[in-house]
Length: 163
Image (cartoon, rainbow, N blue to C red):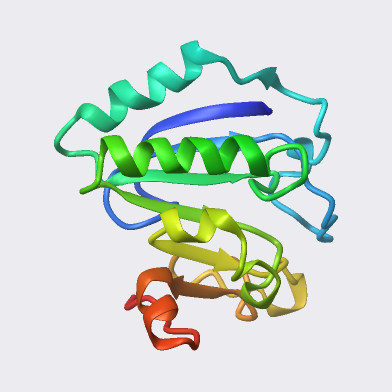
């Protein structure tokens, strides 16, 4: 897996103060994407144990609410296995931290993927510039959903995160 950045003390990509891992690789190609530099799965830097430990150091801080996976697309084929393994490890090591994930895939496409059981919130769907709405918390366009994953899995239908 490759990545472009690790953001610390982020307040824009999920609830509370978060660490954000911006991965490289996205095949959705949304017009007017805010991060087209992250589309190339060979771009950015190699994600190593050094970066993983940097994330863990941030998650050790009591005031950090959790991690957000963004990009690119964390579920791109170049990323999904390592992001899943990292989410699993974070869930085990930091059970009280929340794990958010942004993806261009829809919930219907990913609901059976292994990673889902480690997530608290998924923001799904491609960014659609014609539906852009800067007043919406945590998403860029109104077609995207902010999904409360544990509630959705229990209910068997999409439950939206309270905003």
